[in-house]
Amino acid sequence: MFDRLQQMEDRYIDLGDQMALPEIQNDREAMHKASKAHRDLEETVEKFRDYKQLAKGVEDARAMVADPDMAEMAAEELADLEPKLEAAEAALKIMLLPKDPNDDKNVILEIRAGTGGDEASLFVAEVFRMYQRFAEQHRWKIEVLSESESSVGGLKEVIALIEGDRVYSQMKYESGVHRVQRVPATETQGRVHTSAITVAVLPEAEEVDVKVEQKDLRIDTFCSSGPGGQSVNTTYSAIRITHIPTNTVVSCQDEKSQIKNREKAMRVLRSRLYEVEMQKQHDALAKERKQQVGTGDRSEKIRTYNFPQNRLTDHRIGLTLHQLDLIMTGRLQSIVDALVADDQAQKLRADGAQAA
Image 1 (cartoon, rainbow, N blue to C red):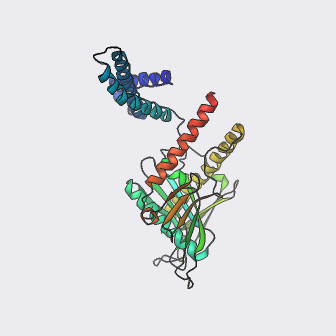
Image 2: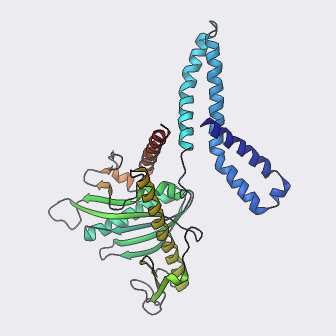
Image 3: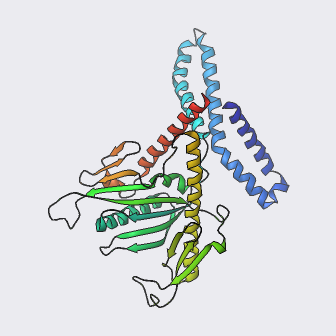
């Protein structure tokens, strides 16, 4: 591990030297490449340098223990430094875990009503508002690509693009079935009903990530429907794109411009096709390891929102919080942090088992 860290530090220093060269500074592409590689290494190298400083402190303190005049002070120093050294080493192990190549990507968020009819559609709207507030806290930009309203003011479906710093790294754990338990407004006898919605978080795919051939697409135009201005039902601005090889269908009608609707639909289509490829790789890896690694199975119930008890339970990690009212305002970070920590712990165990 430490040989690898030393190599990373050497590479970090070398990149810093390269960035000071006039020929690199005058080459925009080379400068961008070097600065990105330098930035990617920075956090790990700084943590490694902290570790080396702590290790030197521990070494010096242990050497002083043999001196009767310094023994007491050295013991106090060791009591302070040794836990810090252990924590720094644990943090470095996590930093060296294989990175998810999609963590830096923006995401396509898709939320759909499942069982529960009108109540499920109302919950779709509430969960989408929760994610909007979570995005605001991170200063992410969120743009609705497509939505379908229900007759009671909820949403049957909403698809949105979230752009910002490392969005997928925070949002990827939200994919799955979200169950809600509460008394609907229309319930006269006060009975608790159970409904469900599905959430899909797809890393936004660039054109370089997935190649979509024009010959594989069938593009249909139709009149927009639903609330709107004079252009509704008068112009063929809505777009439906079918990817023929996979029979993947995406439609968009939120914009008055056919071109803009097509651009939005293509962003969603690329991300869905990218997810299919990711799942193939994931399944192949799982088969090779003879165990299922990671999450993302949409058929799996991942979370329950119990409103009468003000309780949220994440079933994957057995986490229960009695602060559902706060969570619904977008305060999701404690849940995300717990899921990240559990994911890292699983990877560390798998890494240790492979090393053994």
